[in-house]
Image 1 (tube, protein in one colour):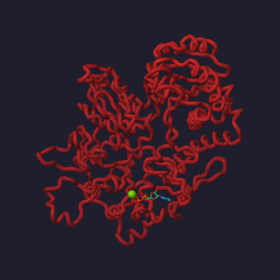
Image 2 (cartoon, helix red, strand yellow; image 1 turned 45 degrees about the vertical axis):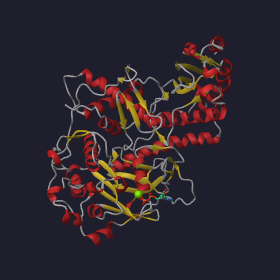
Image 3 (cartoon, protein in one colour; image 1 turned 90 degrees about the vertical axis):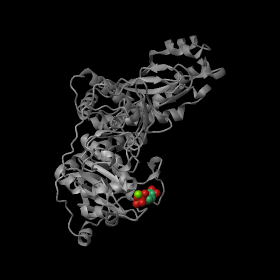
Image 4 (tube, protein in one colour; image 1 turned 180 degrees about the vertical axis):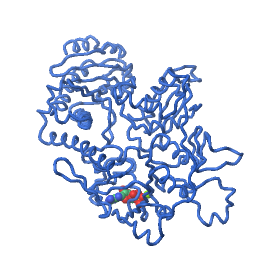
Length: 580
Ligand code: ADP
Ligand code: MG
């Protein structure tokens, strides 16, 4: 502590880039403070990375919370949020030039995710955060030692005090921590129950699904929100170990169709289902909405690139004699992009696909009787999804959930038909069967499309060459700050806007480092081309064993774990992707 203060004094009024000297580890009463990476200029983004470490003995977070994996994840998530609150409460922030003189954490969404910002081991808890050292003078060129002293000796200890020490939590904070642990523990139980009962989704009674707005994932606060209530016929009861019992709707494997009038809550239910692959923080409203971990939302994505995907099940030969069993395009159409997305999702291991009519290419879903009179079958290469859904389920065990308000044909194919009416969910399966007849199975078996594409040894080059400035950077991995789901990687701009299950920016950054890790793995065994799935599984087993640190990011503490399905989606959207 004194050593750091001496350093700060010695740097007073010196040029800002001299602060590289601050890198190091410093002992304070009750915690260790480490400066891991130091920024070169005031207002750099991200700023410097620092960490604090508190012994578990001192923090006294109850051992029971930390015994299981789920509990550790919940505690880690709770601590980074608490630290964030501490910053907002105790730090002056933005006190210097260029917004310098601030603390920050990574961006936190409504999800509880595995992150490298809080690491808990047997002995200690380490929390990593950003610190933007204070600058003053013209253009922020001078280090402001006086403000730095306030940050380090007053603000930081106050934030740490409020974050790490269970004994100092008030009743409400203790209860909150317990809720975080409870949410993740109960979710584990729900997932197990779903596996045993072949359910693909569970929506708890009382869940509050609507969001604040289309660009704000926090819960809608309006009193008009109607809480979810399961139809009796689909209600399941999940016993919890402490005698409690959770009830809610169990969506079964197979084909499910959600219908209803416009604005009656269909897409909101679907959004909750696709978000249900993640845990949500207490108070979110979707704490006990759980979706099988392999669910993948499929949508049309005109203009994306596609590399060597066998979409011939859905799309026959194209104009110009283009073959579709190895389909590539730099500018896919709505229908071909959607066909590719299905094949890629199944290739990456998903057996639960989600669709919303709102974001599908109509001609990919159906071809109606009138158009058949006008358009000769020989002119239409598309075999609409409608005509293969039963076979995909019966032969491949691919479950699907559709939102369809205008296309009755999906009701003809569905094992379960749900109606959303005035935000109430009803099971209308029996009446649909009465009116539309038995489920319309397809007669032909579907052809094999399990493409298992192998990656060429030279892929995912992270180098960036700026031709105009004649400058080459060895590694460019940079999410765009202006768009949540776009990543600059090497010479590529990887557009993941359509990969809607990416929940927060730190996942996008992690995807970038995953691509780099894949590159290193692949090039080490260049003579043995393996499938995309093979390499992704390898990487995820490394992460499971050693944590996100295996990705060796330049800024430790800034990642959160994406699912492997999103990594596959990123791989598939790299325009320079090379398949052997
Ligand atoms: P649909 O897809 O059926 O056209 P949406 O799901 O988009 O309808 O919902 C329409 C509007 O109703 C949205 O603004 C949404 O936030 C709101 N909404 C959805 N579910 C509920 C609910 N349970 N209670 C109150 N408002 C809701
Ligand atoms: Mg809708």
